[in-house]
Image (cartoon, rainbow, N blue to C red; front, side, top):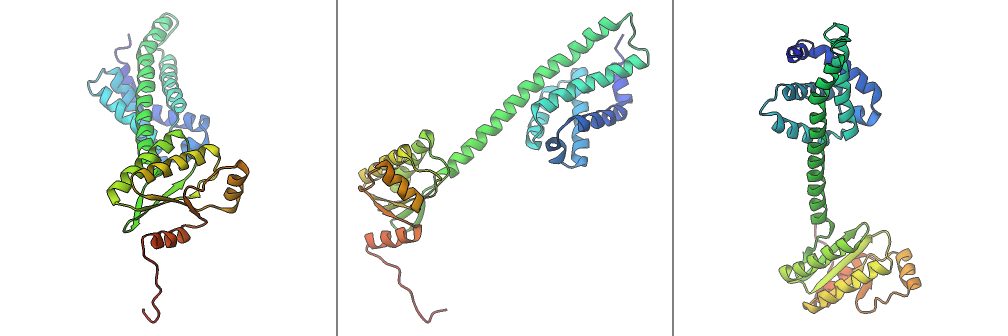
Length: 276
């Protein structure tokens, strides 16, 4: 009865897509339609309908196209709820069209409902799974990239390295800091390591404990650790909490820390007058 459904969708594709775009724009929030241009939204909508048709045709390329499409809409920032509701809405548009032209009637209504369910439900589940896998992969890659950038050890002078810390320090990040410190000290043959906490919003007992552990580990591999970037409010917090930081040097700014580190390695900064 519905063997000509593919042809019906293809013949009326432009009308279906136009109606689908109008409805989805009205029902979506500004985030979905505001982050991409109308041209990209329309192009992606056509790709979405093509994907629906390829599922109806049982195309061998369907799985690959579904994965590619999921990755694309994740990149565009389309929420999963928007995509799944869009699929249901497209099915509704096609069903209403067939109902209006008489293809679906009282006699075959239940058969039509069952047919649409067999057509759209598996695709709904596949889109959810593909979207979830793509999103998990994207988040995993972002997490790896963030970890690589979250605790870098930077050699600034011979025998002197700096580790700038930004953001909250939790147990997982503290482990990464420790690993990068030890690996970097050996790799760069550093004798003095400056841990810059200028960008750390809060230094509590746990954060101080992690820093002390890192300092002890650095000392065991033959280097000295210096804590720099101690703002007045951080200093007050450290005193109020009774945290003992006497085992390594501290300075209020990175500049003063570098000057001290140069002295510790028998060097100093000399200003030259009269040079261009």
